[in-house]
Each structure stands twice: as C-alpha cells, then as structure tokens.
Amino acid sequence: PEPGWAKGRPKTDTAMKMAPVPAFPVPTAVDQLPTKKLKLPPGFKVETWASGVLDARELRQGAKGNIFVSSLFVANKVYAIPEKGEHKAKVIIDKMPMATGIAFHDGSLFVATNTKIMRYDNVEDNLDKLGEPKVIYDKLPGGEDHSWKYLRIKGDKLYFNIGAPCNICDPGAYAKSYRMNLDGTGRQTTASRDPTTRRSHSATRTDDDRRT
Image 1 (cartoon, helix red, strand yellow):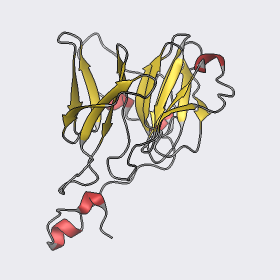
Image 2 (cartoon, rainbow, N blue to C red):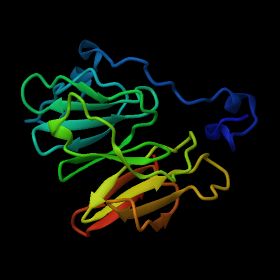
Image 3 (cartoon, rainbow, N blue to C red):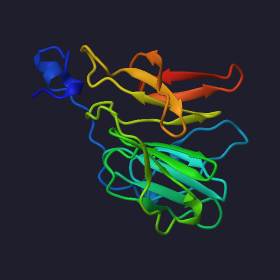
Image 4 (cartoon, helix red, strand yellow):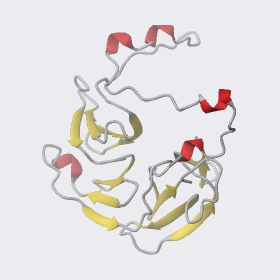
C-alpha cells in the first residue's frame, strides 16, 4: 500500500521521485557537526553541549540536575543527560517504538508512544533501573505517519496530540489535540486539526498546536 506521506502526491514523473530524506542511523560525531558554520550576532557563541544522542525530539528538565531527551522511530530511546560534568548521555529507556512524547512533573517522567501514555515515578532516583512504568492511558489509535506524541503539562492537565495519518486524506478520529487529568481520566478534545508539536504562550496562558 501507498505510505501515508505519499497520499495526494501528483502522479507525474518528477513528483513520483520525491520522498522523505531518511534519518541517519547513528548519532553524528562531534567533529562532523556544522557548529563552526553557524553565524551568530556579535557577543554570542555556539558550542556542542552534549553528543551521542540519536534522533532527538523533546527536551525536559528534571528537578535534580538532569535533562531528559526523547527520540523518534530511528532510536526508540529516552536519554538522561547530567547538567553538570561531561554531559554524557545515558539511555534510560530502550527499544520503545516512537518514545517521543515526554513531560516531567513532580519527580515523575511521563512518556508517550503512538499507542499509550506511561508514567515513571521517582525517575531521577532510579536512572540505572527505572522498572516498569504505570500505564495511565492505553486507548491511543497507533499508526505510523504523524502518530508520535508530544506532551505538555499545564496545571493539573496533561496535553497531547493525535496527528493525521496522511498529508491529504480524511483523518477520521485523528488530527486532534486532547487534554486529560494526570491520572489518565477525564479526556477532553481541545482542538481539531493536525497537531504534531506543542507550545505554550506564557503571556496568554494558552496552548498552540503546530504542524511540522
């Protein structure tokens, strides 16, 4: 069957040759990063803070000196990077398909795949062995294209997206944004569109869904 990204593509010879650029299968070496080519205003500098992370997607700051990094379908990992010292990335979750959505709240790390949302309690005290998470919601529709999740916690609500499974099609139950209580109950629809990223406005205290 035709992949979701190709639906709606014109059937011309030129268009049929178009396809997404594949992601690198391994992290880019530090000396191969184009850091020196970046142009900055006077008084600014750029440097590599951490390396060895494959297919990074979301960043979340913990409460005890750790930065958590999620990934997409190449790595299928979640990393923890200490803010002090050598910033060496440590894999804390491995072989979890589309472990993209993460959020940190009150010592717990929320993780969302394309099928469920989980919570790891006391995560920074158990980085060497997280143990099994508590599944708080397991009724996500799954899928491949745009099915990865992004999480945001505001107040006592967890916000997440369900992206459309194709570029041009009837999305059906997909292409919506939701919020729920932190225990997975009380799901509400907050928007109907194709949201694949999230951001919050601190001034207006509103959420904005972004398509990327």
